[in-house]
Length: 543
Image (cartoon, rainbow, N blue to C red):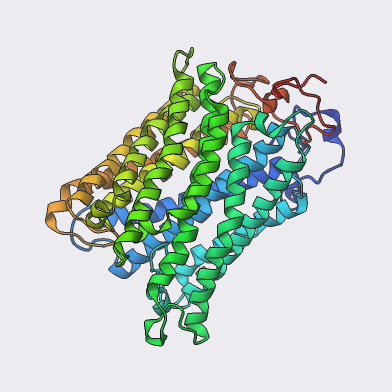
């Protein structure tokens, strides 16, 4: 994706020095990649592969729930599917996709020649491959894959087969990859900006990733601690989470969610950054309230550390605890609301056109806001006690993770894809992908709100008759949504990677601002080898 290859394996449309032997060609180019664009491409392809695997698991879940009774899989395998779907989608699809975007775009946006630590960048990508193989391969171990939910709650994890250890090892490796990636991003942003690009002139995407990287470094070790304690409980006779030896399974939940809640903001902040780039470009206006966006991102990151126990309102928490976490959760909705207000204000009286990136951005704002409101309802302890572990929660987090993170990733692909590949996507196909995804997504997840309100529990392979109709609708929607993503790859991504389509201009979007539009399309292998001189707003190169 980084550049369209001609028949000789040289980079087409690049500068003269691209044709020199300054970087390996063929398979070596990808295995030994140290170029941020190539690594970004690898991350994006890896995450899409994982999206497809996670998608197949989701469709198996939905096939089982198509009608009451046990049809396709037995309950044990059903629990494995729900667990692995969650783990693969979170750690294999969403997070690496955003890291792919960071690798591709941050050096271009800040005028840096590459990422700060090129070899470490390569290492942090290649670590993901064995981890992904272990996660997917755990299905074939004796006793099947982990089946304790993606949250890996004790005491279930203490009773699992050998796949649990493999899963824990995979999570450790993915965590190491995340931490190295984060260090790389922080150092790149803080040390390698072009002269004149102050922090408050940086694009929003760079800002959101800087804050996300700090979040990752803060919470990944906490997860590592929780799963290591699980490992020692399983094999070395400790009793952290085993009540028989004086441990407490609820302690696991506290440690896990202290990681888990910042983690959901890790998955949405870069999405906010992408949307903050796209909305101004298609409204043909500057982003409304840039400073407040930066502060809002920072405050979301800080507040994310004091809301974790809203996942635990039903664990017998004292009412004072419930009150604190309820108010803290409601408070975190304020900076998020500020962001949504700013996007809407940016669009207000703008001369808007609705190309595919903008459609996804507006779709994102609309559906993400719905997901945000259902989250606010779940933040209220008395309501949450009724809705906890029902399909209402499933509806809520899919509205923010699919219609949030995934839509933003699609929007970013359509927005920057022409810069990556040097060709434009087909607008008609892009619009078909958007409307198909939006409609099927809502057919899938909207009924789940009502299932949850009626009391249908999560993670069950069977259900009473009264839930049959809505489950059938949701399953039909899910298969439609899955097919739309296969369509996206074969009819939009592949043609672009193969260079099929009209040639992209340097700045395909007239309202787009920023340094990434100062380099030719496709982006040459090396950019900004000498730091560029920037204009006063740090959006144009002047020398």
